[in-house]
Amino acid sequence: MLLGDVLRKLTDDGAAAEVIMSVGDLALLNAISNRAAREGLGLASFSQAAVRRYSDAASEEEWVTLLGQIGQSVDPAATYLKRAFASALHP
Image (cartoon, rainbow, N blue to C red; front, top):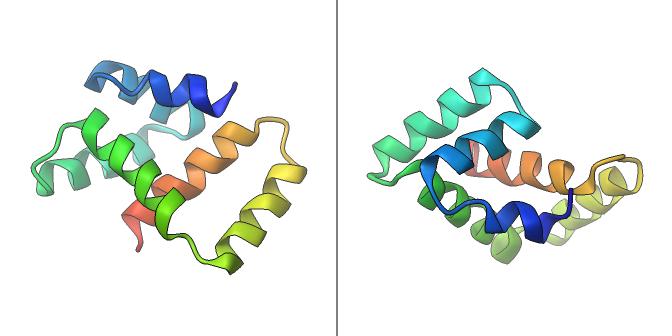
């Protein structure tokens, strides 16, 4: 999957849930849903913000780690999203 295509799917909560499940599991979906609710956001809004925040605020070390993982991944978009969601859950 291409990251741009995935990000375009984050338009509503149902689509966001599908994207999260495609890169994780029910535990990840629950964690993100709970965090979104605590912040007063819908799942799609929280997911979009998490990806944007990761892109804007990741350290150089984080980018090096991400690029190393992407280089070994069969699904670079999923790798990126996993790290972005993890960063949003555990800043």
